[in-house]
Image 1: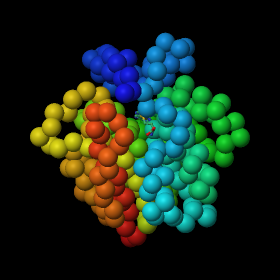
Image 2: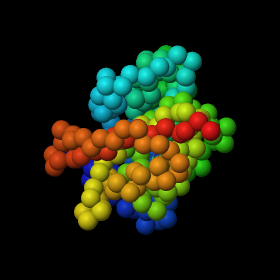
Image 3: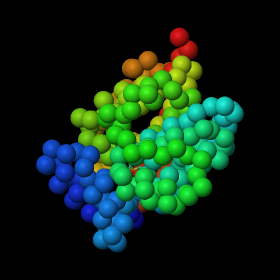
Image 4: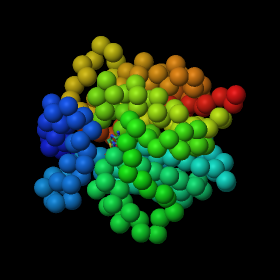
Length: 221
Ligand SMILES: C[S@@+](CC[C@H](N)C(=O)[O-])C[C@H]1O[C@@H](n2cnc3c(N)ncnc32)[C@H](O)[C@@H]1O
């Protein structure tokens, strides 16, 4: 089982201080100093992304992709290897610096950026947007803005693939990572995206985790 103790302590501490996104950089920095670990770093592409691609390979020639909350960079590197012109961003400066160091010859354009206030030139620019497990580490109060900003990255006809832990509305929110309800995932549809595929998939993790894997498209106008 992944040790999330320190990540949860930092999340609580920064949330109490009114800085709900400050703990990511603090955690990556502690990990770099060997004082703690980043529980989501497993140094391979997200299995549910690879599984999606095996079932639904996409045309990538001349197309652009954006990876939200790129963490270790493995998903961005995978999308670039599949042929997308790929941009990826994370709020943590340390995460981006160590990703660039891990992949010195990368074709990916990595940026330090905040999903809650993303660079304006990215609006409406991407053919494929990939978001895995970032919404669930943001407090519910921030998700509405985050969801809106993710949807706004798409160009008309563009696809968004979202992966997130799921819970029933009757289940307690619990500790970080805070799983999403069906309604929170459906917020993308409320913003005007079409839901093309909807899966709930089990993970090999104890205790059992089920994840949403949902594909949306921004309709052509
Ligand atoms: C749970 S990790 C998931 C990493 C990766 N997507 C994966 O699935 O392995 C969430 C990542 O999003 C980043 N992050 C959190 N809030 C963010 C924000 N507001 N803007 C950009 N990145 C953010 C964190 O630093 C972290 O690397």
